View 1: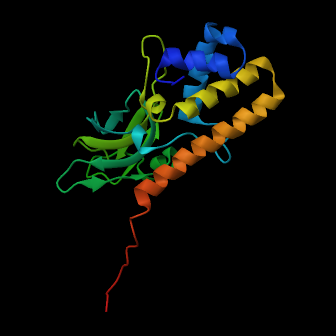
View 2 (view 1 turned 45 degrees about the horizontal axis):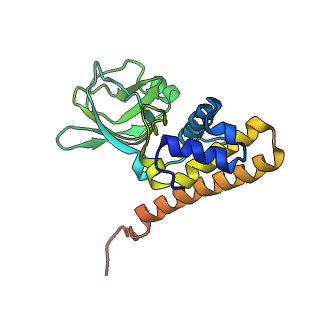
View 3 (view 1 turned 30 degrees about the vertical axis):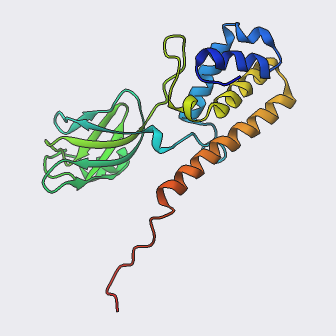
Length: 212
C-alpha cells in the first residue's frame, strides 16, 4: 500500500508494527507528532542530528523595530542574514555575550553582526533597513486537517520508520527499538548527505590571489 497521506501513514504504522489496533488508536497521532518533532530537532547533536535539507529553506523579509526583528513562527535555524541596504550587507553571527561586550550602548548604524535571543533577532549596530533572513523552517505536523507535507511526499519511508521507532518505544520492544532507531537515523543521515552533495558537489574550488 502506497503511503501518500496522513490516513495511509496511520494504516501503514499499524501494519508494519504488527499491532493492527494502532491504525485506529489515537496514540498513533502521538507517534506522528513525535516523528515530526524528531525531524525538526533531532536527538544528540553529535550522533543524532536533525533533518536539514533545502526543502526546509525559506527566505523571509523582516522589518526591524529599533534594530530588533521578530523571527518567523516556524523558524528553526538561520542560514544567512543580510541587511537590505545598497549595497547589501551580510551580517555575521555573534553570541549574546559577545553582543554585550562589543555593543553595550546599542547604537545605530550600518549592520555588521547579529545575535538571536529568544524569538528575536538583534542587528548590531541597530539597523533601520529590512533584513533578509534565509532559514530552515519547521516541517508541519501531519493531522486529519493537514494530511500531507513535503517530507511525506518526498520520502514516506523515513516518516514510517520514525513512527515505528516511537511505536516500538511505546511497546517497550527493545529489539524493535534498536532496529527502527538505526534505520531512522541512517535514513535521516542519508537525506542530509544527499542534500549536501546536491548543493556543493559542483561548487569547485575558489582560488584566491593572482593567477599565472
